[in-house]
Length: 202
Image 1 (cartoon, rainbow, N blue to C red):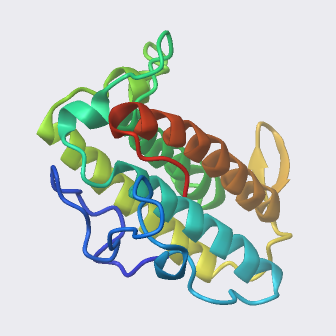
Image 2: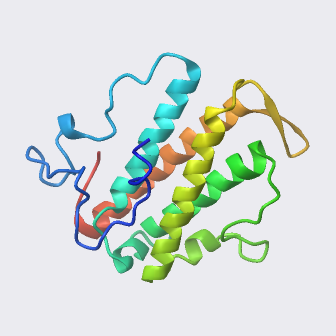
C-alpha cells in the first residue's frame, strides 16, 4: 500500500498527484510502465504477502482512477441506466472494507457507513456532486483501508475462521473475495473514467 499520507488522499480538481508523472508513451494513460507506483518489486512468495500485495495494487488503482477529477466528474453516472459513478465506487468499497474487516473479521458491532435496510444502495445513490460528500468518501475509505491493513498484519493464521451467516468462513476466503471485489469494480472504474475524460486502462 502507498504511504499512509497518500492513501485515499483527496484528489484536487484538475490536478495530478505528484507520484503519477505524465505518461510519455501513451498520452491517454497515467504513467509510463516503469513509473507505475503499483510496481514496487516482488511482494514475497508467502500467501499473506501475495494477497496483501494484490489488495494494495487494486486499492491504488481505484485511487488512480479518481485522480484529478472534481466533484461533478466523480459523481457522474456515465453508463446509464447504471447508477454507478467513481464516487459511488469509492463509497461502496469503503462499505465493503468495513463489512468484511471491521464487522466480520474483527467482530465489531458498528453501523454501516451509508447503506440501511431502507436504502440498500445508498453508497451509490447518495454519491452526489458535492465537495463535502467527496471528502467524506475519501476519509471513510482511508480509515477502513488503514483498519484492514492493521488487522491483517496481526492475523497470524489465514485459515482461522470467523462466523458468517451462521457458518465458519476462513479469513483466507475473505481476502480472496476482497481481491475479486476490487478487480471487478476497477474494471467498472476503467469504463467510468474513460467516459469522463478519455483516460483508459492501467
